[in-house]
Length: 110
Length: 115
Image (cartoon, rainbow over all chains, first blue to last red; front, side, top):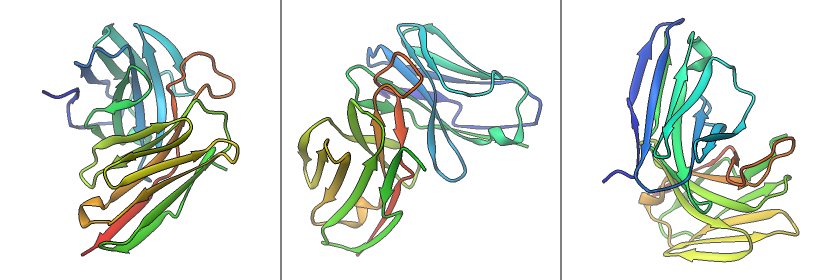
């Protein structure tokens, strides 16, 4: 059973489109995160959610919006995609600090 | 300057060698994490530590809170250890409230172990 899953694994789309990436965890964790890994492989936090409340929002464009329908899910919606949004996006979850990562979603904006 | 610095950026070793990767941080932290990113892209948490030393198999992680420095050691390295090792600090970053879990990442150390 996959602990943290993301869909889709690959996403290729045109500039200006709106897309979503889904994340689900079956670990019973109460905090979930979204990270972006750029072309230089540098990871940076985008959002974290604790018990369905956004508890930190890094300075990402407001075209990005996390949505958590329940404690096990944290989806990432991106509006008006730009070339610079091309990256690998990782979802993660934690309970006591140690984080479990999803497999990543490679987003390519053409 | 990144708040979490790692060295070296790239490391090539022969199978069986003892390997050390270093991490220095300038932020206040609640814990220091070591992660492994496989060539296929998946990320695995290896250690989370806030003091002293932890050991798991051939991997050892140490932290010196006073010096704001951590090391990851791999004993008897093997080609399957080839990966990117990432140091990350967790704790309340300046200017933000809330989560102790948010990670600030180093740029990673790419390790290649040759047979």
